[in-house]
Amino acid sequence: MNESPYSPEEASGMWVYLEHRDGKLEGVSLELLGRSRELARETGESLTALLLGERVEPLAEEAIAAGADRVLVAEHALLGPYTTEPFTKVVAGLIAEQHPNTLLLGATTNGRDLAGRLAVRLRTGLTADCTDLRIDPQSGLLLGEVTGFGHGILATIECPVARPQMATVRPGVFPRPVADPAHSGEVERVDVTLSASDQPVRVVKQTSRRAFDVTQSERLVIGGRGMEGDFALLRRLAKAVHADVGATRVAVDQGWAREDRMIGQTGSVTRPKLAIICGASGAMQFTVGVKDSETIIAINSDPEAPIFEVADYCVAEDAFQVIPPLIEALRREPVEEKS
Amino acid sequence: MHTIVCLKVVPKSEEVTIDEETKTLDRSKARSEINPPDMNAVEMALKLKERHGGTVSLLAMGPPLFEPYLRLGLAMGADQAFLMSDRAFGGADTLATSFVLAEGIRAIGSFDLVLCGDESSDGATGQVPPGIAEWLGLPQVTYVRRIDVSDGSLRAHRELGAGSEVVEADLPSVVSVKHDVNEPRFMDTGRWDWAMNEAPVQIWSAADLEIDVEKAGVPGSPTAVAGVSVAKGADRRREFLSGSPEEIAAQLADKIRAWVKP
Image 1 (cartoon, rainbow over the protein chains, first blue to last red):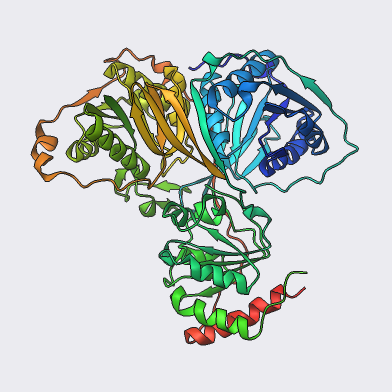
Image 2: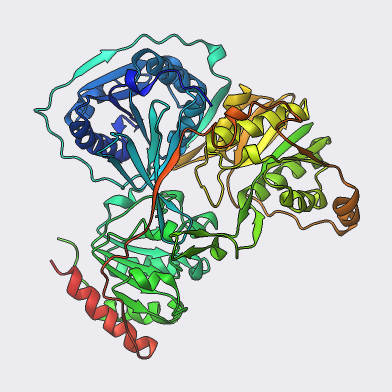
């Protein structure tokens, strides 16, 4: 077998890898801290957050308020923009030294890039894109729930022997914890030894856009393959109901909507009060991202589409026939703005 | 320039059903295909070959019946193909899969670039490309939209959740290609006979490459499925609205107004 460097008996502590942008922690990192706080209480372990970057120590406080008992801060010029090797080297070094039981990361682009590399360096198991994390009451193992294919199967994955038990989680799966300024924790600066030879991939240009956080929307109009690229129509509908626009993976892959609007297993998990889903068939990789919405309206021309199984109000009609008169009707008697 | 493209053969996701008795996925009725983003990786490799010359090799892991899929890639324009095929490779998670593929890449010999699709349509973990890079000790560049190669180095455009970046790395490197970044070409009918009959498809077993089977398949996989369940359907009204599009629109407008009022 692939021998991991330490055994479950030697392992202790729940670790969360924090991502940050523009001087703030990413939402998914806070969500992971919130859930890990609960899990660490169950296992009686302490919760450690990893903070890597060029100048990141000020963010430690926010991590402690979100539940971390300890924040390991690694600062170095080569930890400026994320690149795989320097981050892998620092995190793997800390793990080899301190033997955590669990390591959780956000399933963002760079979170997945790092997790995939680290898991092989550590010869351990990694469960991708979990839609829930639990602790098995008997074995004490971390259980990661993942959706299998698009067909209503949920699988629970465990990592019985290798350590740390690793998992990535999509944005929005867990609620953001309420900051508790009274929660105390320690900030520990760690020594970082990196040289230019540790950075075989160099970032030469970065274009950042303010990401749209679809997990925070109270109302969503979501389009899928059946919209045939006509997201302008959906934006008009969204405007009429004071909603934001989301998209299925197909729609994003087609370039009809940006990646930060993507909902589902690959994308964000959302819980709006109202979701109007247009032209999406309802593959489970998508529906995991909307199933906890308060009310769901689905519009799809195929009456057999599985999307109707998760909808409150079902419209088995061509979206292009229904949406224009719907916008008209809403304009005649406008919807009130969110208070 | 020698590019190796890693391919996965996957069941067409829309044809996979649930076996209601065993609560497991029934892939038996599903036809298979080359994982869609892997097709984008093949296309990217063929474009690089057009520009810089050289060779494109295909590498997959799976049963011998995957061989025809590799031949489809040869008909598109690849030069040679390799299939890692052994019962000992079965049941692998991403650690063991990336190990076996890395062993295959080592056995193919010298190369400049490894291209993979960014994730598979079935497992969808995206973990195999970084895994291959780590086993080989090479740089990785994931979620790439575009790549340019010159003078032993590459320049790649990565898509990030909020924005994008351009990175540079020396060759050889491992690159994962985002889905739908190009239009995979059709098979070249002129290559068909060669691809189906004469083209070299090397099948390698664990013994052929002296692969440590303890690092492959189930023994080499640290993760295990602890349980499988059918997702509980939410308790939804599932009320179908009827009438003309205008009548339906009016009903929907009423309902939407009712919910969004404070």
